[in-house]
Length: 251
Ligand SMILES: Nc1ncnc2c1ncn2[C@@H]1O[C@H](COP(=O)(O)OP(=O)(O)OP(=O)(O)O)[C@@H](O)[C@H]1O
Image: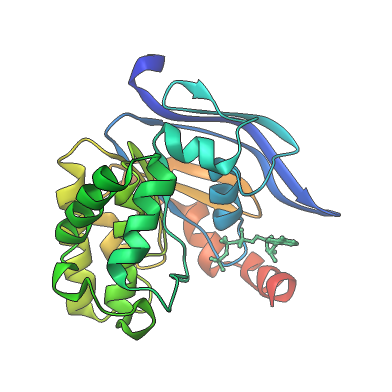
């Protein structure tokens, strides 16, 4: 693959917690402007992979190249300044600050902007995510959908070219999920590269070009959504005898 057209390249990535190998020789690439879905059973290592890509965890081995730069030695903020942002599975805003203040901090700190520019980008991110009418509400009082929107607004305020979404559709009603999918689809039109971990498959499959499947920290399949959904090995991971072992291991 032409490196200039590659937004993310992960090669031979590994991570262990003590004896538990959570990421095992993970290799994949995502083309610029593409959307990749990541699925896998609970405990497969999906969020750990995001933590390694974003720099909140250090890998034991392997390389990560994002947006043309080897980011393995960079701290999380430098990765963010480069154009890499993420949302968290459980939204953790500053509950005592308003939605606007939360997004403003992301724009100022995560994008390294002056106050004036940060204000402009914070407003734009609130507008883009439909949160503008609730900009002055305390983050701790927002509904789950609005807290998910806030997660997204904080990430967008940093000006990401590569955006990682961690289970952003989880816990939403069908209508809320639909609204979120429309928002992410809109984002795709701006050329932002998206990597999305999601258990809500119909939401994921409405957006992504490809799906990567993780099991016990290993990539077991990657390809077009239709082919992945028909893959017997993928079905076995969710329904087969190993599912019991996985349940025992991860509780
Ligand atoms: N900091 C840590 N210390 C020790 N073990 C950890 C740590 N973080 C994650 N793990 C373990 O690594 C494994 C993978 O966890 P991870 O959260 O990456 O899985 P996941 O695929 O995102 O799961 P889920 O779908 O439930 O969110 C689990 O067994 C988890 O308990």
